[in-house]
Image 1 (spheres, helix red, strand yellow):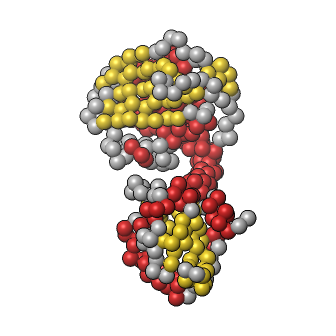
Image 2: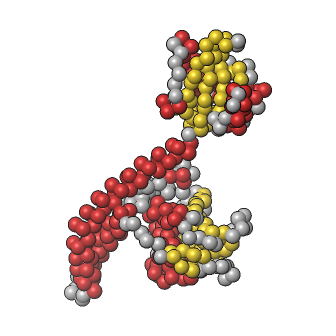
Image 3: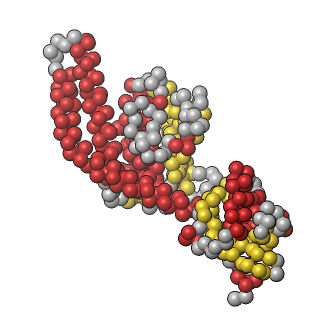
Length: 352
């Protein structure tokens, strides 16, 4: 294939730069990657494709390269940050090839690749390693702590149920012991979830029935906390294919979080229906009237071990999102300070 044809159809952005650091030629992939037309690029400093903060350092890099030119393969490429015409930035890798004594003088050909997806996969791989390590630790913790925790909980329950004339102060102490033992048991259970290789039990599932089962389990607890529950369920919802136990766990976690967000009481609305913006998709939402979540915290709340609650583990929402992903769905949040938060499970009607 002639050079000109390869240059035009290359899957990489190819940019030819002269000794002065100006762009001599660029291919169509460069237009696609950076958002500039070729005419806008020709004759411009190559730094226009970099964030302002890198301009000075990159100009020196160009000078140093022409002073001692060498070919650098993509695998050994320089990792940089590119900037598109709209100002957005993205990670790139750049390899260089030197062309000496061409009709246009000494030139360098830069091959630029967007590595956003590769970096995301690397992050996910590191996260998987972390999960595996945590899972091994969790198994050991569970083995050592489950039995004594069960003894503490059962003895505390027996004491509370017995009529032995405890003083109010003593009873409050026993109730505190019971609550903290329950909390410790929940922490152990959530860490154990990291180590489990869950086998999905798939079957027909109606999201409204999922709501009914979840409320049977936690509805009384929520109401006792002074929180009213309203349901707005679309009775025409089609059944999906999913793991009812796993999705029920997600809904219970969202309801429990809503309860914890409103210690002084409030209201929770559970709604279901078809997604108007995406045909064939359903939603199940939990909306509370709590204090809301700060905007800077919203991007982090689904991260592993990140929590906004005192005494939280940072596992509940992470696990919930993972379960939705296993169903080819999404878990999303919208929140406003002083108004409340809305968590939405989005599922395809053919979830599997």
